[in-house]
Length: 413
Length: 129
Picture 1: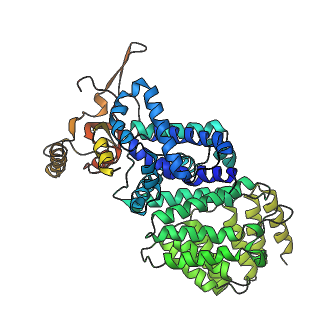
Picture 2: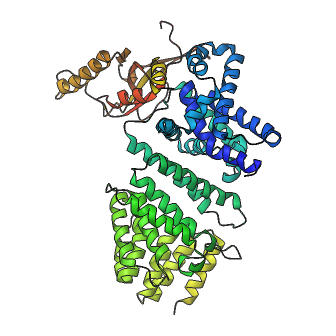
């Protein structure tokens, strides 16, 4: 491994773990974060000449702890903190015990525990969702504020401010670094944040915009981490499978002209079979958890699409059944709309139209009218279809969609 | 490194203020002869007892309706009738509680026998503490 690869690995994969451990010891997230950053800077400075240490994580822990001690010593106003932290810091000052902490199997549980605390802290409900996303990427994912800002196309100062404000609230309101009793709710918040990060990558329509593909991959990496930390949660497995199914299709979702390619027309030979196979394994294991969950249902739907050899081979009744359950769980109008599409494929356009009539609150959503129009067209009612296509067109500002809908209007007999 | 040490350190208690925001038009009756008054008060007595028994109670009070409020503005030296802000919900009472961390404070606030929104704010400074 090159020094550069080792440094990337250190910041992305090891820093979150070391930060979690140090924050637990110091009882001070901000101080721990500063110390880890100081240590990463030292790695960048010294590794190219001195070489990569045998145990990078252990090295990071030792150096970060020394940096924390330096900072505490420098800050006279932190005398109270010194008193609180001195025992732990001085207790295990020899590097050997660090190696032990990071490598020894017996201690592994404790690190897992600390790491999980940090991951869950980032998604505490007392923090708003923007802050949850920024903190997760920054503290767990080890991304710099500049990298997060680039991925979300916002000024770096905005991300910096979000992180600073969130860390200040964690400190001043005493948001604890602990595993909550109501773990399920917190895990849901975590999964929502991870999926938001993934979607920020998924919705990227420009193949040149590689940073966002990186973001989707980062979300997958963090979801894998959550999967390792919470192996018994079926929903975490469900989300990981869902992300892998969608990631497997990334290369075929945009054509050479930068236009979005619908599922029906994607080149299935270019789907990533290894990722689909892994998703299948993860999903099968996740389905052993019988508690209901929306991510698993979405993964089941994605699995049907990913495993269909051709569009015509798609098992629409299975997809319609999964959508029916998702509809029950979420009561979401968008889910009902998607369900209507699946039902139309499974049972014909009239069945789909009947379900569409029960969708509420989406009258100004162009895709509702576009869907109705397609089903009316298939049901042999071109006049009604034309009207619905025109309504859809009046509701979208996207030129590509307008061109598409104009084409559909012209194609009606 | 043991988690016991971390927990021990976090036991240094924090104080939080619970600002109880309720819609006064929907609020509990203040009239002791009204139906349901006893049941309503029983819930509050139980809640207060729980705070006291758990060592959480620092201070607290139920307030007269916001129509009785008067605002003194020290920046302009004016005195005006009414609450500081007119909102759908008004501050009906408050507690100051002692809790280990925000999660414990939120759990205590969630047990309060009232509808409405409870703002939980850490206390920065208290002259008698």
